[in-house]
Length: 312
Image 1 (cartoon, rainbow, N blue to C red):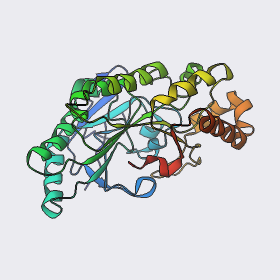
Image 2: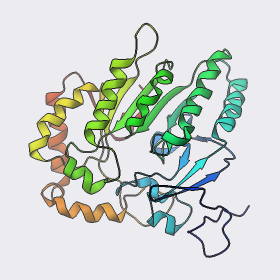
Image 3: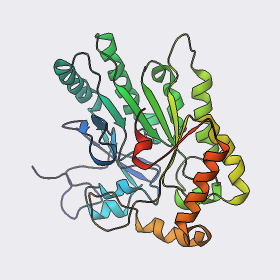
């Protein structure tokens, strides 16, 4: 079957037109054939990955997900386009029912999301992720165990769904905060929410859930990739990380030009030159930061790479 041709990213007649503009982002709508993708590789311990969107408005300079784009031009324009899967809720309901027909007492484990942010700004309008949470919870109403869910995001929008989140018995929220310095964040991920907003979102989730009415999720802060934190910000940042029960750190993905393989974009490699004081001996910088986490956060689980992304 022919691949979709997106308006603005093809020289022929496009098959997918820009449905709307969200800021400077081209937004396309597309029906998905499937939504649950068999998890492999880095997150292979899950049953499925789930991505409500393709592309991401945050467009972080280092994001490996840019490799998984429809074409080279869209890869170059990472952050300037998003495809939302308009039939996502209907497809998920069908796929979960199919799972439970074969595994009536075994809930699937789902990682949401692996190549997008399920709470990017567009979610505030289209509410795809919220509808997907509702579908998962409806399985419980039908008598099936609710899926084990891990949500990976860097967005404060997640607090909108506290009413749904507290109904999951097995939920982990991974809040991505790669640096404790706003100056560094603005260099590497200028379109993303502030560090303070992300930490406040985690605080609100923990403070808003009524133990008698719901379940408190596990909380991870993923410092992935580990970016520099300025010396003036480091102590305060580490202290704030105590809000989580797990901290995950990881270095940059290897850089290469091939598509469909997780890779750090060249844009980030160029930004790294500004922080030579950290990257000239990156392994030592990484080790020292890890040692500080272990020393100053005795009650928090410090994990690295793949192991840190498991639910347990």
